[in-house]
Length: 386
Image 1 (tube, rainbow, N blue to C red):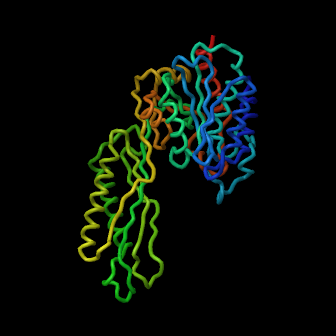
Image 2 (image 1 turned 180 degrees about the horizontal axis):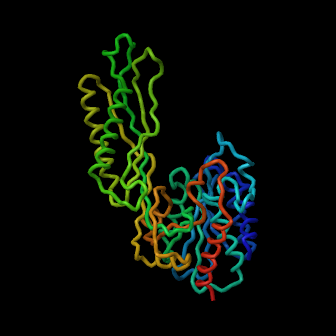
Image 3 (image 1 turned 60 degrees about the vertical axis):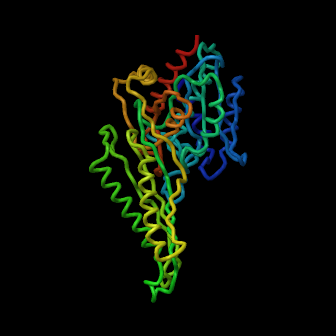
């Protein structure tokens, strides 16, 4: 089967504008029908509202452990980006396929589906599992509902390959992430009598100073892992919102922050330190203003991935890709940490495309990367079939 078959599937996938804020059901139903035409049953796991879904399917025997191929169906928005063509119509130029999600990560999904069609008539000695999720782009949200179901099943996959774009390098580790919000409550008053109020923006900036000091400590004294491009845990403030008018001392201010931790750092320890600083600031503020507060909440979190370099899943994928033995570690997160932490499935990340193209206008994946992915998948499925 030529790369053209994968390109035809990719064309269909790109046409679904499955931005995270929208439903992905049309795309999921396309995959369901694609598999059904090959005689393959699938399982759809919806969100609570029934507007989005994961899809899970198994080829081959269900009573033994197999290999899981996993990816997400949602993409990031295109508003405000200067695209040279319609982002939801696949365009081929200069041996590249352009469109939103080509690299991240519908190119991988297209390769998986094309390979399944190629091997659908074969007998599987060991099972191939596929899982495609929703809402990965907003914090690996959707796949958790599927993982909750798989956690109660006896025969889980023996290994997992997350097809995020790694330029087909075998990636064994990525950082974890904690997203949080700090809400500061002060006391408003007329700005001409500012000392009689408690400025919540000032309280927030005190917390920003705490976070910056923590980042400096992590850089200078914390754990380092030189295999990461940014070799230490990062603490970052992304937004700050507060105040209503210049002549009012603001009584509320909130900031959003994140921690992206290397696997050797415990993010809870860092959260505890942030919470302790918040409690101290709140107590100090309440000594003058009853009701003052500094509250810290976690809005989302997913674990990092740290697979040993000598794990069987690593050796296996390196054989499939004819890799030179090198492994990588990536700064961005994937659903792999959840599969490893919640289900105990040894996991690597390996997929076509370059993450530097993801989320950009004129996102693309090269024909060569798609071809390399198809070669890997054919080798994999060839090993599973008779």
